[in-house]
Image (cartoon, rainbow, N blue to C red):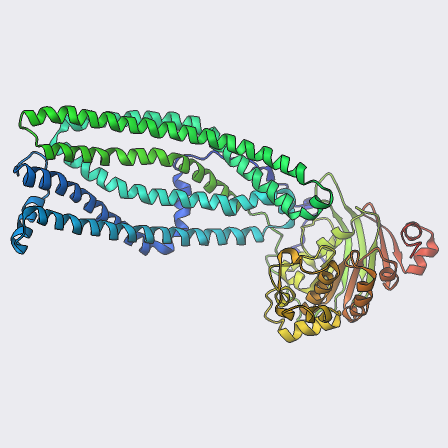
Length: 628
């Protein structure tokens, strides 16, 4: 059956992509507006919270400015100095203080204290709620981004994870998302500082253009310092990110293979490697800290210079009676409002560097569209299929220059038990992966009940095939969770029935909580044999029409294997079964045996026929199964 959706022979393998991009370390611009625009898409559902946060930060900023006016103009000039007029504005606070004094019949200093206390409470409340709403919106937006990134990575094909280290993906989901959080939180803080900055700059210009311009001359100095700081720190921050990714990759690799590490006594060797990477990370972190510290100290010194200029200039104005002492103090406080956002922006530059590069890495992953071929017009299979499988002149290689399967053709009849044997690397497991649509293939065709696999959605194909691997994966959760795998059709009764069939019910019943027993990471509280029995229960509960056992009993002890043989016989009744096994009993019970060598079908026949042919199967039988 040829269809238009079948991949052409020209596309014998999926197009090759440059997966090394995931190893490349991006520098990132200080502000990438396109990236920020995309990021805002995840914050848009929380626009109301962000709007409320913006209103609150405006109120808090106004309260800060008025508090400074109350201290300098009301307290120092009006109450202590007895002067109400000055070139520095009081924003109507002197008049308001007099009104409060008359309303409550209290002394002026108490009236000023009451106003200041109300402003302090207003500032504290609005500032606190502003931070809560801002951080809440950011956290929820990044939660959605992290979920979308996780979901996107789950949909990438196995070929992607063959070439991209898991540690690199972990860095994007964890460290890079955290870098975006730090950036957005810092930007929210900067907004709260720039409102007083604008108010202070406006008042200062109306008060003393000359002094304000003198102070503003220091701003370009900060800008120049920022430019050189960015140039010096960009490479350092790139190396920091590089070593963090290397640490994650090394940690994931060693923790996932901890059993092999301990059995081979590689703890000290692995610790030495990890320590070396950690030392490089620490060295670059120290460089970034030293740069940031020097930059912060330089900015602080500029603020001190500005303060000296105000005291020198303002002192002369006081002597000439053109400016009051409170006006000088207010100018000083406004000068802090002028410099604080600039200094904070400089301090946030390292966060911006990291976050922009992290954002590029995240969106690079989100934009990675590599996926399994899905048909434009999928064929719908009936609710139950017979289970006939046919490979027709299938050619495949994980890399174009390294073919694994070469012109493989075999027809597996519905309900038949076919064993696949061959030397290591002959392509046995590759055939199963192609049947499960884990990889795309172009040259040749695979049929399921005479329907081309490329005309079927991958999820539909996988629903019909139950695979039991030698390395059975245990998820966090209960025994029942690991049997059902979230399928609502697998009820408690169905899970128990499947477990009884494959003789797993016995050991499950002896566990403290039975089917509700929580399994630790990778099922370490179960033996290898128990995990394999659980794997059979999982497949049987899913009730697939095609059963694949990929050396599923290779790690089972003899006693446990005797338990599952009866269950396997029941499991294979009425199902097409493909057995990749080394054990003589399993192979002998197959209806036919397919022998592969270097990706080529060497022999096909029954156990007796192949032995009589004196070919490769006979050689394998003599060398591997003689003792059995």
